[in-house]
Length: 209
Figure 1 (cartoon, rainbow, N blue to C red):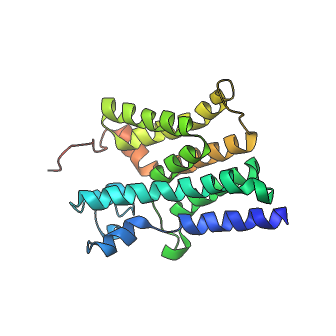
Figure 2 (tube, helix red, strand yellow):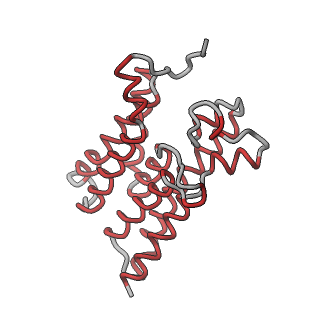
Figure 3 (cartoon, rainbow, N blue to C red):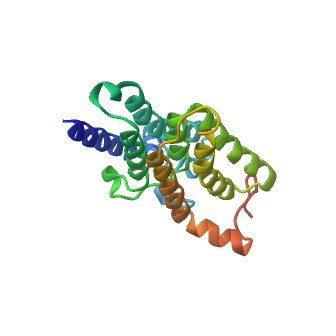
C-alpha cells in the first residue's frame, strides 16, 4: 500500500504542476495567450511582457505554490501513510516536470524557475530563502534573470547538502532530485545560455529598441 500511496502522491503532484498558470491567469484576465508573443514561454516573465504586472505577479506566486504545496503536503501528512523523504523527492520532481511538460497543455510548458523555488521552500524554508537570495543577488549585480536562475538552481543542491551540517538531515534522494531539476532547468535555458555567451541576452529593466 505504501508504494501505491507514493505513486498517487507523485501523480497528483505532476497534475498540479501541469496547471500552466501563465495561460490560465492570462485567460482569466482577458490577456493574450503568453505562448503567442515575446519568448512564447508560458511563464511569469513573459506574462509581464503583456504589460499587466498584476497578472505576472499572480502567475509567479501560483507557479511557486504548485511546487511548494505538494512537497509540504507530503511532509505534513505523508508520515501517516508511510511516505517519507523518498516520496518528497519524487513529488517535488513530479511537480517540476509537470510545469515543464504539462499534460493539460500539450506538454509545452515553461522553464520552471518559480516552481523550482517553490519546491526548495517546501523542502526547507531556509533552503528556499538561500536559493531565492542567490537569485536576487545575481540579478541585482548582473541584471540577467536567466543567469540568476541558472546560478541559484546550481547552488540549491549544495545549500541542501551544506544544511546537513547546520540544522537538518540531508537525504541523498532529495539531493539527487534537486540536481536533476537544476540540470533540467539548465536545459530549458539553453537558448538563454547561448545568448549569454554571445553577449546578446537582454538585461532586467532594459528597454527594447
